Image (cartoon, rainbow, N blue to C red; front, side, top):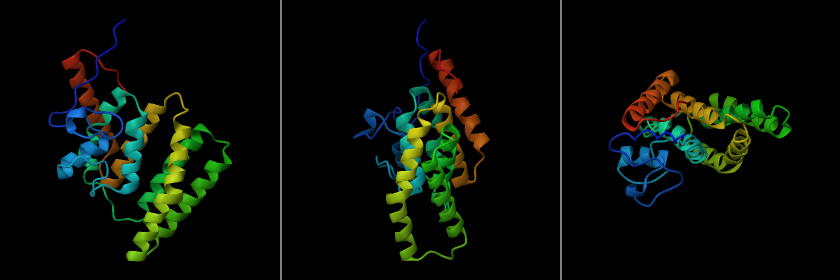
Length: 208
């Protein structure tokens, strides 16, 4: 049986690929595509994207299969301008990913500790006032330390699930929707449209 061909990438963007790239002719990861749309520069950390969301997007892009990566490609436009000012967004996002990992490994005490810590930080920051320079530095240190560690561990657990691609894609769509105020269902319908166009053009492609 022939392998179905993957949908084409949207016009104006490089071909979707894993990891970072030196030139758009070589392809782009999801965050590099977002940066090209936002700034015209090839970087995987555009200034308009929340750093925790960008970290999740990079990890999901590199972990999923080609068909799922292509289906997520429409998110690049929203990721280009997705930086909520709410300080609670980062730890809440990490806590959400950790909770998703707990559904894969419900008996993990490590994941339970991480979830408790992340949600407690989110609740504390939700009650905090206007952030100053010290608060922004504290958020950066949290993300580069325990926040990043918690996210990486949760993603490793999620990758052991038989439906890992679907779980990771759903988490990223929900995270973008929360950051931009868009409907996650609208993002899913847009991804389905990209896949449908690709099947018409290339004669194949599996649905998520």
